[in-house]
Image 1 (cartoon, rainbow, N blue to C red):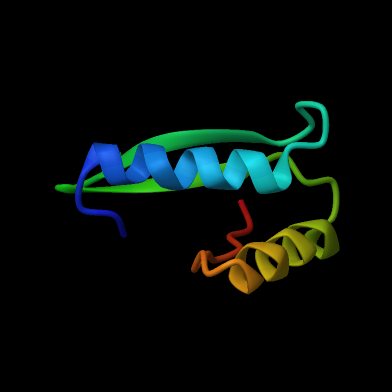
Image 2 (image 1 turned 180 degrees about the vertical axis):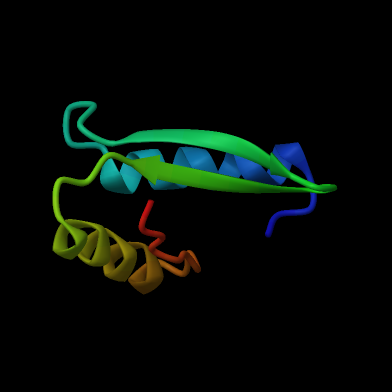
Length: 68
């Protein structure tokens, strides 16, 4: 989790730059209690989300894939 909205905005910009396929993936900042998270979606298949997770992890961004 990210402690400040400013930190979340930095992570969102990095995620958008890495995942940006002509706007196919949206990113959004979400409040979670006193912290913040950045979400990226939609993915048609879980395998696509996992590939995105691996790409972000390789660049130092710790992310999780959630099914909902």
